[in-house]
Length: 136
Image 1 (cartoon, one colour):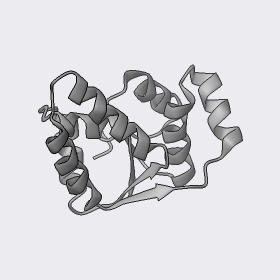
Image 2: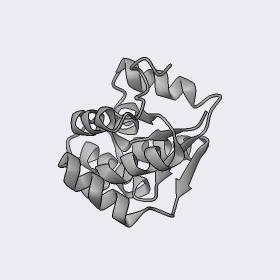
Image 3: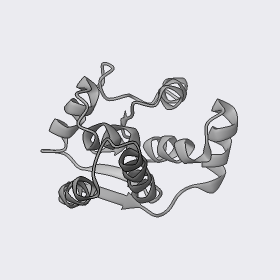
Image 4: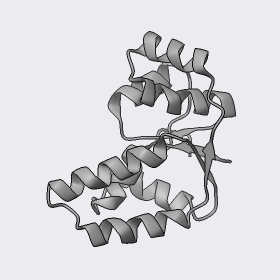
């Protein structure tokens, strides 16, 4: 079953943190595909630049990482439901960016992979399964 992949998971991979949920998602991508809103492209790169500024990764490591994730089974969604995203952002006090991940998971009927606490709370409130929380 496809799942929605939040950039917070990918940022953990980039800085080589060993978070169990992030590791589980990486393993899951070996046999399943992930969907992401189009803003994911920007969020991943923004996180890499911030990690570079903090000395956590080099430019070369960022480039290698981007090459590696480009080979993953990730599909970009380019048809967001604006009304749905805004409603979710307002209801759950999320950023519009985080609401885009939640809206995609709801629309696709897919579980969500995230490390973002506010997004996790909102997903639970919308009965969206979270990878690593009994979803499998």
